Length: 431
Image (cartoon, helix red, strand yellow):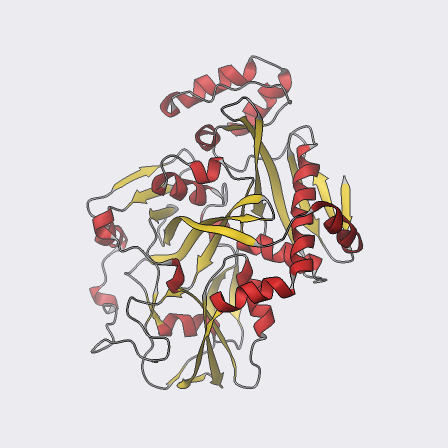
C-alpha cells in the first residue's frame, strides 16, 4: 500500500514537523499483572523495589521464560486492553485517552526511532484509527499502535544474568505479583501521546542513590515455599476490600482501594541492567531506550562470571541526561515525528482505518492495508468509553451514548442502520 524509506525522512522532516521534543509529561495510570490462570491485573499497580543483598553474590545464568511482551502473552486477544482499563479506573473521565492522538507503547516508539537512526532490527505492529466527534461537531481521531512479536515469550538459554540480577536485587510486593506497567501522557511534536511501558522497580522513599544499602535493619525475605498461600489466597492478600470485575474479553480487573496502596513517584522509577565488567553498556544506547518511557533512573550491575559486588553497581541519573540527549538528536527525533504523522495519515486514508506496519530489513518500511478482515484493537465497550468508533465508512453514525450494560443489542442496531459495510464491521467486533 505504501513504502517509507529512510532516505526520504530528512526531506519530510524539514517540511512537516515542529520542535521534536517531549513536553507536558503526566502520569495516567499503572497496573500489575498477576500469575493467575485467568488474565488478571490490579489497578493501581504494585512495583518491585530496589533492595540489594548488601554483600557480594554469585548468580546462576538466566533460565526459565522471558516475557517479550507480557500484555500479549497474558491477554493475546487485546494486548492494549489493560492500558485502557487502568486508565479508566484512575481517571474516570477518561480524558487523557479520549484526547490522545496516539496510543502505543515504548517498545514500538523505540523501534521506530531505531528505524530513522538506521537500525536494521525487524518489527511489526498493527495500526487502527478510531473516529469520533468533539463538542463542536468536529471530527477527532485516536490512532492505536498494537505491537506484534513473533513470540510473546521465549525460553532463556543464555549466559546472561540480567533477569536473575533483577530478581535478587529487588523485592516484590507479594507472591503471585508479576510485571508492573505504567501509562503516561505527553506531547511530542504536536502529537498528544499516551504511552505504556514496563518498569523494573523503584527506589523506596528516603533511599539515597550514593548508598548501596537502603536504611533497613535487615533484608526482609518473602515467605518460604511451604508458607506461601495458594493461588486463590495470593490475590486476596493484596486485594482485600477491593472491587473486581471480568470484562467481556475475559480480563479480570481488580481495583485496589487507596488505603491499600502507596503512590509511586515517577522520579523514583528505575531500569535495571546487568553487564560484564569488560563490556559496559553504551550510555547513548541506554538513553535512546529510555527516551520514550522517560524512565529517570538506571542501575547497571557489572559482574565477573556471575559474581556481583557492591562496588560494581552504578546508578545513572537519566532525567538530567535526557534533555541534552534530545538536543543532540533533534534531527532523528524530527524524523520520528514525521514518520508518526505519515503513518497516521496513510492509515486514516484507508477505507477501514486499519493497517499493518512492517519492517523486515533494507531501507524501506511497508504500510499494508488490512481491509475489513483485521480484528479490532479493543473490546467494543472501550470504543464507547473512548467516544469513538471503529471506522466502516466515513459517514457511518454510531450511538456512543448507550448504556455499557446493554451494549450488545444497541451497538448492533446503530451500526446496522447505515450500510452493509457497517454491518460487516459489527460482525468483526462480535467475533
